[in-house]
Figure 1: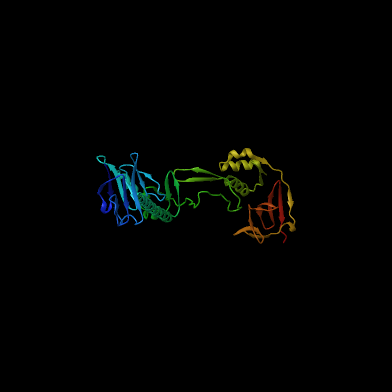
Figure 2: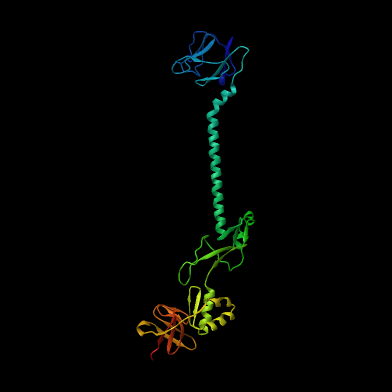
Length: 334
């Protein structure tokens, strides 16, 4: 014998014998004993009929097309909110768990999606707060640099305001003579000419050192020669001087004797500078200094003057310039 059993609602657990032609109807007035009226589930003009053909059960009226639907024992079916399954006596084994999964699948999916969205929102808020905290801590530090996986900073007071786990990864740089950079890339520019200087970075333990050739040796030699009245010029790596033996002794006196091999005798001639080629005024004082000047610049002894050369001396009577292979002299007319 085949039976039909209902799941959920007020019919839950009720089992009825399933005849070869059995119908569930929504009409309250039922006159046939093979009809079961359940108007609380099925509309009045609706009928769901169980039929058996060749030992195979079918449902008529289950779909809108009214085609026969083959049904299987112990599988839970749902029609207009009415849940049921049929089985052969002694073989009851309804697939309730599978039915419940299908029944609550939309709710489970919705809940899962809602949880995912909530988790993503919480993570986004947490990530935003962390980013804001990092930005706030970086603002407290002001400036610094990263080296060997640690942040090196200059402000001790700022470090004390940071969280403890930040302080463990920060190193305080105390010497005040270090240049503090706001950018990692730097450009070396001459403060006097504005031209780009060549430099080389030498990494150190606590800092990086930038090596710049400032021609200090050349300046030292020029000051030495000018102080002792030598006429000189530099051509390539060679120094052209008016007195090579005197120049050699002077270089040895300051520990630059190795430069003696670059000393060459220069042949000089003296030229008088016309007044129309000397657009400068002269300031002469035995106490405060001597220089020539125009509206834009001042030139002291040792300065290079355009078109005239390097000032060798300024006296009451003349101004002497050293140019390449010659000496220019401007006679001061009283």
